[in-house]
Length: 384
Image (cartoon, rainbow, N blue to C red):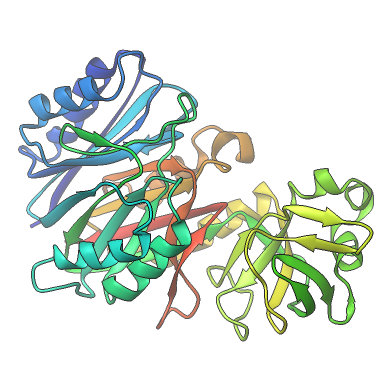
């Protein structure tokens, strides 16, 4: 039987914060075989003393985690300050990993993780990945998608908004430019993806493109179409519009714009002379896109619908990977997502982090595609 407990603590004294959070986590478990520890590291003594304290309190060196913009647990969120969230686990088969010196070999990491899973990946497995965001994320995800099927893969890019040096760890070993994570072997896994954007147009066909530049949509100058989607004052202030009017990219050309079927990307450049705009990945002629508005009201409703679809049966534990662009600054309400999670799963230990990006599946529920996500919350539930 899987047992899990969660604790969260805020404060600049890292070892003291870990002791408080880990003690609370152990209260729901008794003894830990594994722990997941997320830290928003504004700690003057660094990460190592936190991990040493965690080993002492938890009684295990099987402690997996990464630095974060913020942490979540036990119905509480903490962003922009020193804080730790600890999940203690027992009664579950787990394979922690920390793969260092990844740069240049990103496409091979999925295969290396798969080789460490006894008997290979299964559909009952949850693979949690915590990469350094400075790695080639596209190559990493392609490797995960190929090598780790049929396991479920979720995670987030590590972060350090204070020192600009994201770190990952297992036990007291701390690395950079690495991938930390763990394979959890439960009886069943359920994944939910919630998005912070609302599509405001139908799907449009890219009719002319050059690399990352979209030149025409449905035969019209692409920037003209973007301005129409922006409306009002935003149409005249493109730099401001870029913060709110994003591009929705379906999981495939024939996909719909239903929640959880598309990813969003910022517009990263405008060319008024060519009446074009650019996105941070190559787009081909014939691809389909839509425009989406980033707004808290739609995000809140999408979160509620996602949680309602996952409410039953009661899971043994949950992990929530949230975008650093969500949270209190976006919703205008501190702790909103943690409260929603706690209300939906009042007896389920849930821990999480605010990352640089998210990793999760989107598209056809029967055959989803693993993607790099932004402005999303990815919830993974493991059934006991």
